[in-house]
Length: 481
Ligand code: GAL
Image 1 (cartoon, rainbow, N blue to C red):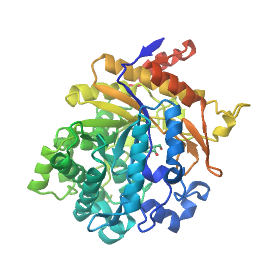
Image 2 (cartoon, rainbow, N blue to C red; image 1 turned 45 degrees about the vertical axis):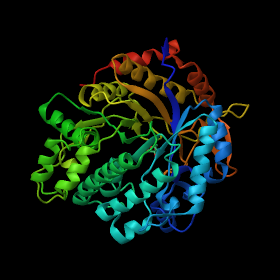
Image 3 (cartoon, rainbow, N blue to C red; image 1 turned 90 degrees about the horizontal axis):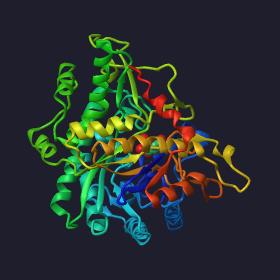
């Protein structure tokens, strides 16, 4: 079976400043630098963000490798803590400007379209220590000052801007599940942070529209969508899945595309007395400044069942889990290294949802990928990692994406996480995702089998699905509800 995509399709990959660059411009630490300095034991094998994949020093060679694996577009992010010198005034650091200018120019020289994101979870740590980070609307305004400098210095060449990567992860990881800095468990703060992030995104869009002089310039947001599937058809499980969807997906989707938060969610937050503080002027900004295009990070679905605790239980602090519980569906296909379910068909459901409920806005898959540990297990005698599992994973997702496109969904590209194995909080370099492997002791980078394969895909716009993979189609069609 062959899947043919159109010739304009983006074939690319995504990375981020904090996960690839390594620490430069030491005036400000971001929260990862600080977290590692204070608690190095919380990072796999004690590996911190100070070198990452050395992109700051080796960006020319790295971009040449990205070219070699056929990428026609790449996302990275500009780090607030590296570009800005005086955080209150928003003045720039000269070396930061030089570095990001050179990176953008290098991408363009190689005919790679740079997609530039303004926040990949990173925030200067002082802004958390002084003001509570995203809990503060003052910090929202400082963020807009940073964005203004990005647009000013790079807007002549960057066409595709992104205001945030996965804002719900800042909310849930940082303020509920304690997997991200500042590792709090505070439902009320979580709700306010969610609102403040949406406000920050809308304020950046407002500024962009006022100042942008690039005729093709456009701005969007990247959301990690986790379609929610109820464990059974029982009403309680269905209600739980609806809430999970409201909280994890629709909160930012509706606000970013329709300019309004979902009414059902507002009612619940109000009833529970945790609704965010807002003003009429702010809601107007959110309403009037919606995105031009959407990036969707998709890794896994969300299997949901009725909550374990009752929302009437006043003794319990507010958490979205008052309304749903995760469901460990028997027999689901898992990537055990990351503990994430593999369910490519959800991409089709996402495509359909965007078409039917979000005005068929232009969108692309901005991340998808497979983190695998100890990939040296798969080295062949020539020193190439034989990551056939990754090729199959990507192909299966593209199969369902293509089906969505055939039904009219307005998807214009696919980006894999990530071009070159990079660093992550907590897991550090445990799981590898790249088309290109990185020996973190020597920083020697080597193309994996999937990288050579992707080059052919990008050049031809075509995926070949070998017969032995056809079985997955039946597997994915097996209904769970
Ligand atoms: C995403 C995130 C990336 C990357 C990826 C794989 O949620 O945007 O930064 O770490 O997960 O774990």
